[in-house]
Length: 90
Image (cartoon, rainbow, N blue to C red; front, top):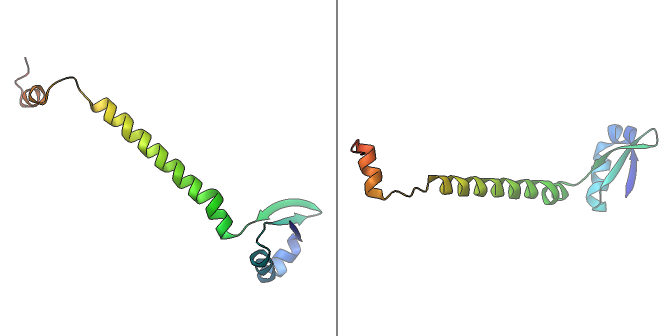
C-alpha cells in the first residue's frame, strides 16, 4: 500500500487522487509517521460498504415483513372477522 503524508494530501490532492486511481489500492495517510486515515476508491467503497448496507437493510425489511405477517394471522375465519368488525361478535 502506498503511504502519503497528510501535508501532501492537503497541498497536492489532485495528484493523490490520480495515484489512487492508477494504483487501484488504498492509500494510507500519515501524520507524524503514524497512519491516521485510509483513502479508498469509490468503487471499493461501494463494494465493501454500500452493497453490504443495502443487503442488511433488505434482510431487516424482510424479517420485519415476515414477523408482521405471522402476527396478523388469526385462527378466526374471514366470516368471523367480518362479523366482529360489523359488531355482531358474540
